View 1 (cartoon, helix red, strand yellow):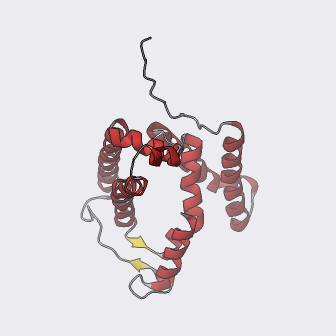
View 2 (cartoon, rainbow, N blue to C red; view 1 turned 45 degrees about the vertical axis):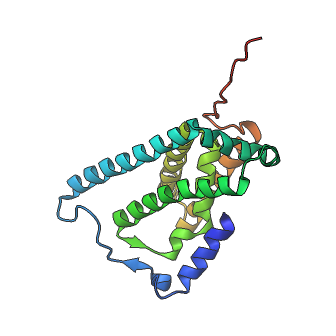
Length: 207
């Protein structure tokens, strides 16, 4: 995943269609004629609607037969193949379901900022999203939401460390990354299941 993100960044960095190092600016977004406060409220509502749609789709897929096969492929790929499941086809389905969600979120993010550039594809952002999943709980829909909120909150609050300790911007940037890395390492060592662990469905077999 990190390699793909870096490859895309390098392609965007050296391509004319993406604006090169300057990116693409002055993108027409939504609600441009509204007041600033109305815009923020509208964007919040639109984001919540998009999030709700993605969560509902994820829950429906997770509870379906396909979702159970996906979990089997994730945990025991050889076992899934031995039971006759098309492992390659399942992985393609995962991409087919998750890619539109990622495209939707990226589109909303770009329209909100009215800018997109190669710096948005730096490896750190992939690392940050990975940390969100580990902290919240990998494999858990609720964990993904909790982890995203907590890690993004932590990353945003630490930007004010320079005001508290009178540190330079470069030092603050390094410390912020260090804090995120320490959280990732701490959860991997002490709580690998995350804050909201994945709930394993148990089937009672009478006997």
